[in-house]
Image (tube, one colour):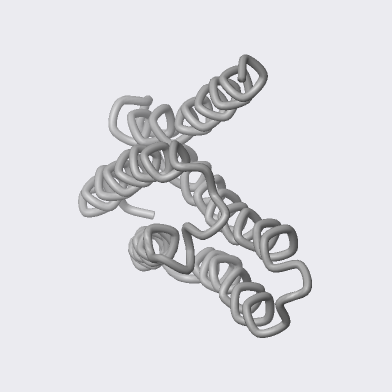
Length: 154
């Protein structure tokens, strides 16, 4: 039991630490010297694309471990696990504002899937509150950057 509590604490700490680049670059997009604000936006969007892709990897791993031997379940979940990276990469090819919107929508979609019956299957009960907290912060930071892009030329 103590091992499980320690593992849960590590996952929570790492998840919260993963918010640091979103928060820091989102704030820097507003507060950094003007010559650095656009760099902060690019850093935000690149990190966002990486993390969105990572969330697909989480589902990929769960599909392989949870559906071992269940062909129908594994194929669908593996296919859906590819969607985040197929959203994230093209988002980086769009203009900054559109790309930020696409990434934000991607986070909303994967969050919606993760909270569905199929998406949460196999995860421990404490995982969904963590994912929800992280998703809310990530989506809010996207809105912060999108708002900044209305006033930033680039």
